[in-house]
Length: 230
Ligand SMILES: *Cc1c(COP(=O)(O)O)cnc(C)c1O
Image 1 (cartoon, rainbow, N blue to C red):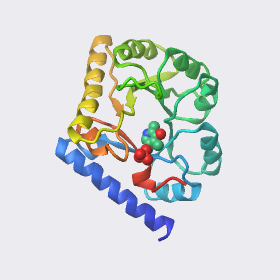
Image 2: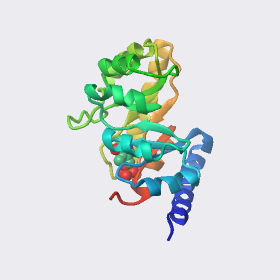
Image 3: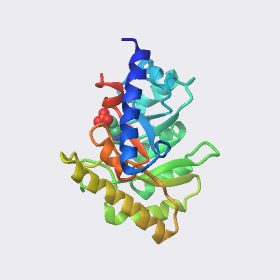
């Protein structure tokens, strides 16, 4: 099958999965953005998906992302950095991405803001670490609201909400419960600090439906969209 036919077929399949989840939650399709998690995928394949309507690309590894962006500079997409952020990489991230999902400490946010080369704000999400895993980035749930209050005051950034990568859970209800807790925290934080965050970046290939049912506005799908990583 050609890349073009393959892209059309996979996009139709994922969009229908998103639509089903929206329907069962009484939400509209417009509420949920599909971010293609394109790490380890070839520029040619990515191009085929974009030609068939994919508008957001998420990358984890900075070097790989920058070289890909050079090859794909003619594509009209928004770039999301979805990997872990080391503070010595913030300058390159600020230069190359419209959205940064993994902000989990104030230092990263202030560096991104001061290194933002464009007049537009960098869109940021605070990453939560709901399972308190040392191996993953993210702020503990109890510390998230304060961090949001601090980041919301920084010029050059626009804070939109939360991102998270919960541990895999077998059961749909367990998946749903952890996503629901992020939504609740978003509402509480908005109330407490007078913020108007409205985005939740949650849900990947294996837990997309549960995430959408609980309020996800951005799903980051890799394998289920593009296929196995090379
Ligand atoms: C790779 C990745 C994804 C996509 O994972 P799949 O299971 O392939 O859908 C989503 N989010 C992040 C942060 C990733 O690193």
